[in-house]
Length: 195
Length: 198
Image (cartoon, rainbow over all chains, first blue to last red; front, side, top):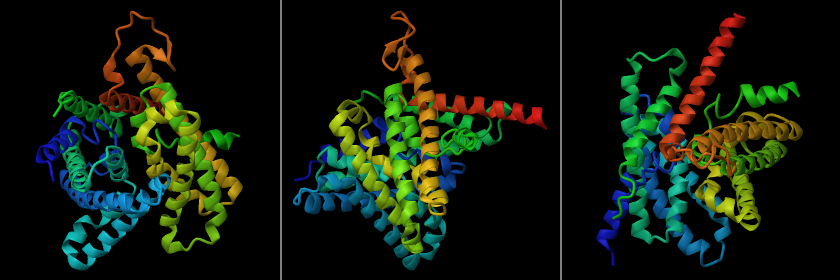
């Protein structure tokens, strides 16, 4: 039986209250690296959503049907990272064959996703929280959406920063990080909301 | 020795190369956490650099990244188990960031750009330099955050009990803001030094 209320609460909690990037600091590298333009940020977000939903499902299956029955939980980190790396590779090949235009727009971001710690992070957190299959997938999608939301907002801010006057020593990364801090502060407003 | 410090400071993975941001921001809430994270990553970095360098002639080029990740993940698992057994408190407070050392870009970047081309001895030293650079950066950031946010350093009260704690510094926004300001200060020092020499 699927408890829709619980799924909804996972969705809202992961996207707003415990935003993966701005509250949990998972996926900061692409968040800081690929956020110069809103369009590329959105493309990256979409690629991540796709991979994270699949990865959550796959790692749940691997954990429940391979690691737990054979008492191999200590291999969790290795098993999960291999599943994710293989998955990213397969997704890349599939998109290349099935939809060249999509590949042209997402292709360069896919290899980067393997080292996006949010993907491995969500897989490990799903196990820690004892989620079932559907809950895991929903939490994966929610985590990816929270990443997309954060990177999209941040890219918007950075686009504005391009044209503003900034003291020379704060130009580039420093001012970007401080503005990320301000966005994170806004998200702190959701903290304490229990669903 | 000079080259050692040069690598640690001028090629500092966090402040100069901007790699490994997630653990930097996530675990720099207190000096103990920062130090624990930095040293764990250093250990993994030395071991993985050493072994990747030994195996560099055997690993086929096409699957090298996957092989590196497996080697790194192996050492991360070992470190994770050691921490859980001997330092359960640190293991608890670092939480998910310990397994996430696997995807720390610093380690993969050093494997790809250094260990795959150099001898095991040199690679291990490179791992040590980079790891210590990472640790130094984490300790600086976490010291600022802990001092401002809690009035303590490594758990010892420094600013007294009456210090109005700026909890914001320990919370996530503080991480971004402190790192941004530290990077700004470094940028200012570099441009100043540049004009002096030029």
